[in-house]
Image (cartoon, rainbow, N blue to C red; front, side, top):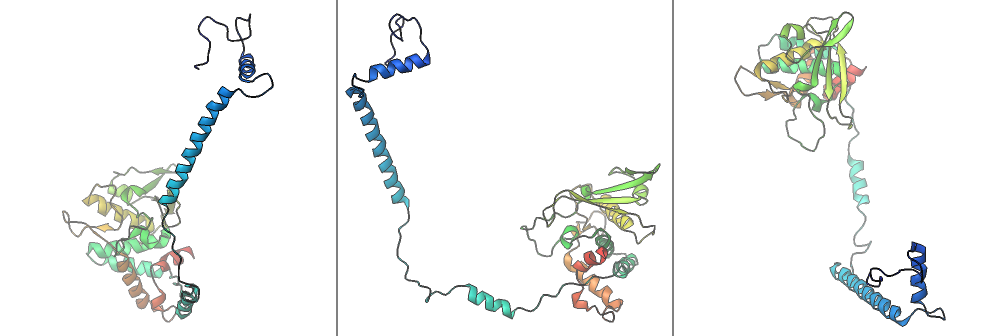
Length: 296
């Protein structure tokens, strides 16, 4: 910009009042070269100074990077002194016992748990019975409807909350959604229910599971879910309250059903129904047996 002509003078060839970008480039190239085609000494000196400055900056940058690298010291450990870790790990794997998968249970197990809980006045026992029946029909994983005895924040599974539950009623041949504050009579007479999985083990978010009322007054997954919903709503209006929450008495602090509670109740029901005689050992009945049995 310093070499541009003064205001009022021509910036192209003599006698022209204006010029294009191509003419300006050609004009600069003509004045920058001598008659024999060589670059003028003034231009050479200017660009040689810039090239030397760039080279110095580049060298300084390389030296700075080298100084920031850690010291490299030769290692005295060889393959003979430090064997591979795969050998001992493979040995440990050979000593492990064979994996025993949990076996499926029939519908008689969750129904027995729900019937036994009905005869009790404990809110905890009734919550366990209802959750077992819900898990069997809705094919739930243990972490989706109970609280683990040991907290583990690394899991991405989100338990079902009050805001994840929807009830539906048949009206003129169509399923209509009931509002969250619907009367207890409407919820306990719903024709269907949906659970929304905000996040689960396999990473699928906002998946929905729907179940229809099977016609039974008490041993229905929709009725069991309605009992859980109404019990929690009678004691708290928090939409984040989990379905595993129960209240022993109005005004008391809430408690939650754990995976240990479900496991112990299932094993007791399997013993009472003589599952050993059916070829299903009690030690192979666990929380996953509900999901496997409901899928059969």
